[in-house]
Length: 195
Ligand code: MN3
Image 1: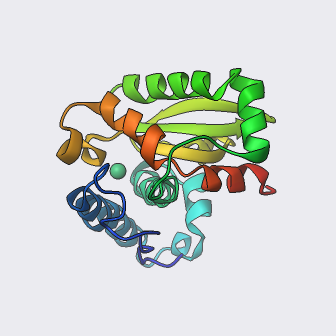
Image 2 (image 1 turned 135 degrees about the horizontal axis):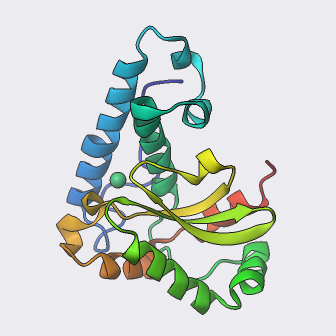
């Protein structure tokens, strides 16, 4: 894998006022970068360094897994948001959400509840497993990618994701994520992609 951080898919100011430039700077340039630096140090001179990031996440344990998964999870999180995001998904994903959650409103309620009640650091996800959509949460660095689930969308609920802008109010951050940030085009592209 290449040990270089991908640029954000938008400018650091682009998600303001919902997520500030300060939050995106620290989150991307300090937190995300630190996971990548740690992984680079852990894998220096080892054959695993030649694997793709996804392969490392799927096959590693311990510190290598924690740092590799956090690099992957954050790449996925940045793409899970966009300026003027939120709203509702379109096309096949809209139909599947109606099928598996009864309605988008019901999906939103369940996603917000899962993200808000995830104890401590972690992630809330919309995943596809055996043809059905599911909301799951993972702790710390854990990721559905490790458990054979296809990731469609994620919200980072580590405090570093929201504390600058929302202080302790995780529920407000999650509500804003759904209302103004969620990138349903990305989720739909993941949903319809093969594999
Ligand atoms: Mn984070």
